[in-house]
Image (tube, rainbow, N blue to C red; front, top):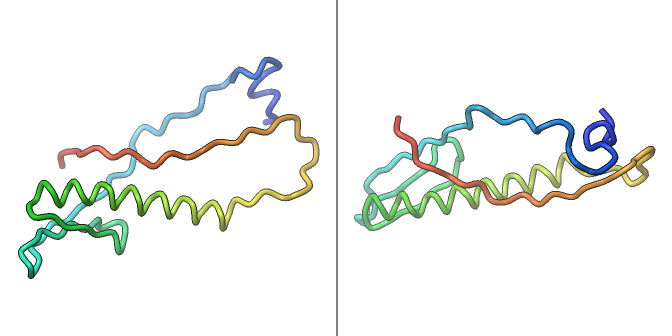
Length: 109
């Protein structure tokens, strides 16, 4: 589908972007560390860990760690696999988008 078919002549989208109905869930495991701190680890993101003095602080810290890990992985993915060719042919328009760090929300199991 060409950009003109999607955006029309005035730049307004004619088609809506599909919404992902179910976002992936990330599991955080908590365990007691040897130094008395609570260790939080995201199971789906190897190496993504944090800690806190109590469970609440550990969960707050792991949210920041997960956001950082996902942001780095997105950047690495884009650098490796999404480089645009230099000589594009028949391009009518081009847009640039900035990716924001993902927001996380706690869900009950």
